[in-house]
Length: 333
Image: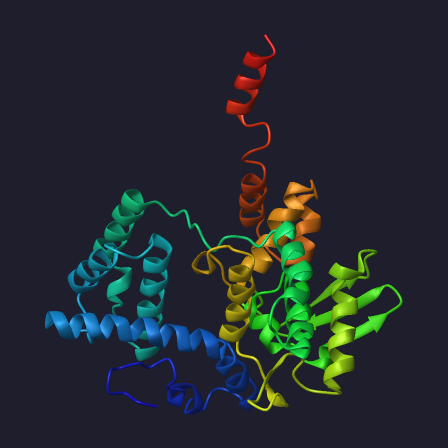
């Protein structure tokens, strides 16, 4: 652990040195935050430290005034939800340090946050969804593009499983053959850990066979397993320069790059898309086809209806649009 910048969320000495805790309790307390969460908190804390260093302000301890000034400078370019996440990370680090008074909980900081939310709003645009029509264009275009056949087979499986399973990019990257079971009806994929599953309970995502073989994720994965000859370990892997298969999994960034590559090939702006576009695209497409909220949530594993309803509103914004109704009536008068 490095304490040069007072990041304490990796410091487990207090827990490990607590003689009143059993070994089992210590082990589970240390599992309270996922490693990627701590990584994200450290990145946010480092940003705060850099700002304080530039402004010649103390970051440890920090005053409520310093934090309020920081988030207001941050508000010049960051979204309200990003600012809230930064405050959360800074606050968690102060708690881990054992400070008697956490400056992030002061009324001054809370008022500053409230003012920023009123100024900026909390709506997040997010990445543009890859809709079913986009996916069809990509699948139909693959044979025309100068991409090695084995890469096409892998990428087709990634795109279809990402869309049909409504997976996050980290979930796609973490898929292992041991997580998948096939049946006459399709395949079941066990997700051991995900962003929304902080308790580590896991979830099973079912993907059935579909009649349109071009778009069948189950057949695409079977074809990938056949040509790659993977028998265990990471499901999706990269290639060496000599086109031999690597043993390690593709990173989540590589998943995003694959989405962007094919989006560009069908003539769309790749900067507007990412790996989350597959998950977003499934939910938006399902909403456009009138699928019930609870069925969409079962596939996407959302715990709140708010995000799913946002997808539904997005899908329906041109359906029964008042402008269309006005001018259709005007034409037929």
